[in-house]
Amino acid sequence: MPHYVKVKLKYIVLSALSVVTISLSPAASRASTSYYNAFGRKQGLNTVVGDFLNNVLADSRIKAYFTNANIPALHAALVTQFCMLEGGPCEFNENMKTVHQNLGVTDAAFNALAEDLQKSMVYHNIPLAAQNNLLAKLAPMEKGIVTK
Image (tube, rainbow, N blue to C red):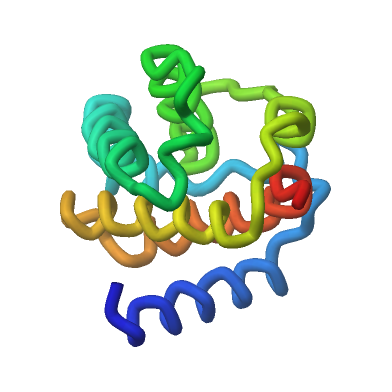
């Protein structure tokens, strides 16, 4: 990944952390439906998440974390989570700390996952505002996901 993209991603994540608090409730974490529409609604989210998971499973830095994962269930959960976060009509109530507590996720793995997501969003021409909104909602989850 080019240096400027890493710097930009880091800036976006740091900006998000200063704006979004960790204790977002599902209602407070909802975005305007315009972001949901920018992703192409549920069908577009399905496509982006499918591509994202393909990137993750091909990424030597993090694919081992997904060896025993139920990929179809993960795909469905991510579509639902992203749908809710981007203002769509979905409800997602999984506790990220509980889901990831035994995985030993590192900061580097979390960042690699974010890079893979960003790559998929760019590939599918998701508008920057919608990308930033989703990343801003996901960034605070790092504290519950990273355990190493």
